[in-house]
Image (cartoon, rainbow, N blue to C red):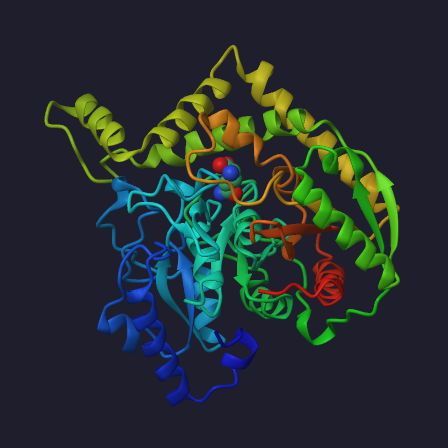
Length: 453
Ligand code: GLN
C-alpha cells in the first residue's frame, strides 16, 4: 500500500484510482476491519481526498455513526467532527467506517455489533482493541492510514498487535468535538499508520486548538513533521517493574530495542513506577464513572433506538437493555456505583488521588529522561477466547492506561516478530506537549530496529 506521504503527492486522477482500487480490495477482504461495504457514492462523492479509514466513533456528516452499538444503528451524523474538518482541509477525506469494540470499551474488537475484526497476521488472533478495525485495515493493506481513539490504549495496543504505528497525543492536543465520548478526561483521537513519518503527518493535520472543545489546549501549535530529526541524542528511561511482568517474547523485543537505542547513541536509565494493579484500579474507576455519565444520553428520548411500549420507565429499561451489549452495561453499573453517595469518597475520590500520584511519578522520571520506553501489552496478540472474564482482559491494559491518566503523548511501533510470526510492539512515552521529541525518538527507534513487515 502506498504511504500517506506518497499519497499526498498524487494528482486528483490518481487519488480517484486509489479510492476505487481500495474500495475493491475492501470488498474482497475478510478480516472485518470495516463495518460495511462502501457504496459508489462513498467512493466518488464523499470528498475527493486521500482516503482515510475512520473509527466508527468519530462523527462524519451524513454517515451512519454507531460506535458499533445496536443502540445507535440508523443514527445519521448531522455534522463533521473537528478532526474530520481538518482532514478535508488538508486534502484527505474520510473513507470507510472502521470496526471497534462497542463504545470503545474493550481490548479485542470482539464486542462490536457488526462482529469481530481478525488480525491480518493470524485470523485466529485478535487485532486488539478498541480501534482494532483501524489497525487491521492499515496492517492488512486496505487503508493508507486511519484514525482511532485512545482512552486507555485503544490506538497503541491494536497497532502493536497488528505491526503498525499508533499514536496517542497529549490530552488536549486534538479536539474531541464530534468524537463520541467514552471517558471525557482520557479520550484522544490518534493516527494509525504504516510508519512513524506518516503518523507525524497525520498528527500534524488533526492537532491544534479548537474553540468548539472546552478541553482543547489553547497553546500555539507548531508542526512537527518539518523538524523531524532521528539524530537527536536522548535520555530514555526504562521502567523495570513494567518489563518484569511481560511475556518472554515481549522481553526479547524489549532487549532488542534497548540495544538498538544504545547503538544509536541514546542513553538508557532505569526507573520504577507505582504497582500496575493500583494503576489498573484507578483507571477502571475513572473510566467507568465518566462512561456512566456520558452514556446516560442514550435513553431513547435524546439518542438511541427507542424500545419498550409500557410507559417512560419501560422505555428507559428496554432501550438500554436491548441497545447496549453486556460489557457496556457492566461498565455503566460499575461507574454508577463508584459515583453513588456513600461510595464516592471510597472509590472515585481515591482513584483521582492515585491518578495524581501517577502523574507525579511520570513527572519525576521526566526530570531525568526525555522519553520512556515501555511494553504496550504483556503479550503479543492473544487468540480469541483467551480472556475468560472482563478482569482478565482489563489486565492486558496495564502498560497503556497510566499514560492516559497522566495525559501524556505516546507512540507504539513494531520492533520485531515473535516465533509465531506475530508482531511485537513497544511504546515510547513523552512529556506533555513535547510530541516533537516523542516523534524524533520514535523515528530513531524505527530506523535502528528495521522491522520487516
Ligand atoms: N481497553 C481499555 C478499556 O476498555 C481502553 C479502551 C480505549 O482506549 N478506548 O477501557
